[in-house]
Length: 353
Image (cartoon, rainbow, N blue to C red; front, side, top):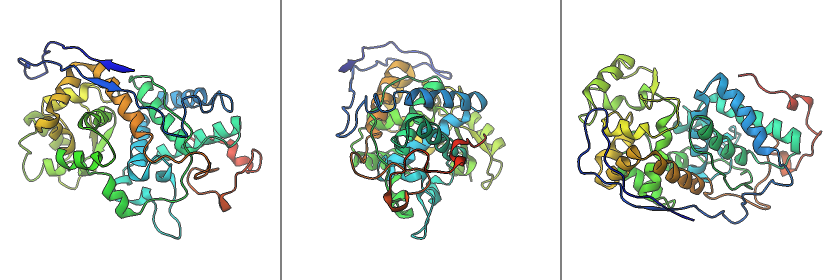
């Protein structure tokens, strides 16, 4: 169903008032499920799936809401490299280092991998080995958004897990760095079918989470990036006093643990953390989209949901492709499907947080 958004009047930002701005009417079409995926895929075979995942993640986030950003980022880094096949979860092997060993993934939260494996154990114990690690990663990302204050939405399921991981070079080629400008990001994601609206909406995932100083120090040293607000710069220099400091800071200074549209308000006030963030407001092709999302959170949520559903279906494996891993970090031996009870008793224990 097409969703239409009407004009909205201008609202003040923190540092200045937008003059003569209008929210352009736009339409966002919810993507249809890819062949082999369905919104009701586990309705009869594992009807408690989503309840198990959400209940477990609520417990995790009650203890550490920061894990929500880690799970959302894990899904992004899985899908953008060789599709949503759970390959980012795999450990390295004799064939070489894994995707998680590639530079863009070294900052993925170690606990995110533990959380996904714990979800697999809970779900497989309840429903046997029918739910893939890639589906669990997608569900965890969805619930990370919702349980931190974002929209609740359904996602198509039925993905199967890949049996190979991407090389370092392939991983690097498909994950633009935080130092990339808008042109680089738009060009990269356009090859995967994403529009500028999709790109700006997905970038809103930076409304939660933290970043290491090393990912944005080129904007601090040797001098301030002129697109960065002076006070914001001063505060960052306290957190990152040298260009080799490995401290962390929130990506959204206004509501760092809440999934909302404040990230776009940050950009309008020249308080975006990465070059890839701030340049979305600097670049004329995406500036209007940033402004619209800063004004209208409902518009952002709707476009974000559609872009997430679209991203979550990149190069998925379905049907008899791939496998259902019995451990998310490694490929099944001989590609065999292991029935409930065939693993050791340790499978019923969850890792501590």
